[in-house]
Length: 158
Image 1 (tube, rainbow, N blue to C red):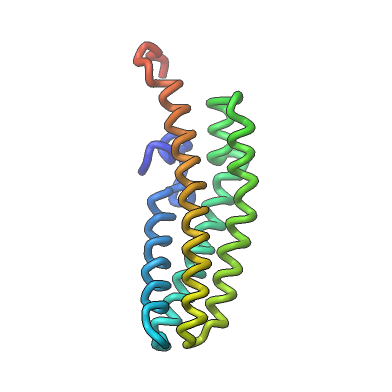
Image 2 (tube, one colour):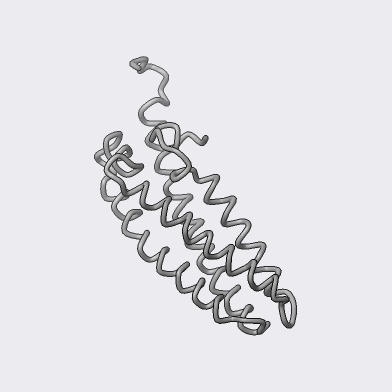
């Protein structure tokens, strides 16, 4: 479990490693579907399923983060002065969910068209950059808060 999840006391819903694992599987499946002039039925189905799986993992992940006792609540408790940064991250969740849902819809309709899968892959690539920036920002914020709280080594309170 990563430091953020350990601090927040969460389960799999918050685990950024799980998000990365499912994201990686979706990225590989999209790449396979995109790389040929016409993907196989199995490759297209696998890509759609992987994208849908990522959508579901992100919905659970973001729901945990936004829950009453989730990441944002824990982080706000640790660093109330960072509320504006936390709120900006939280506000980006609906956009990320809408983007992956649109990509899933596009993938469902792509069929076996290589050109359609190229468009799906391009949309997925843009989504990937946004998601990576978002998750990286969360992790940096949590690391910064942990360093501020525990980094000096002088505060020995449990």
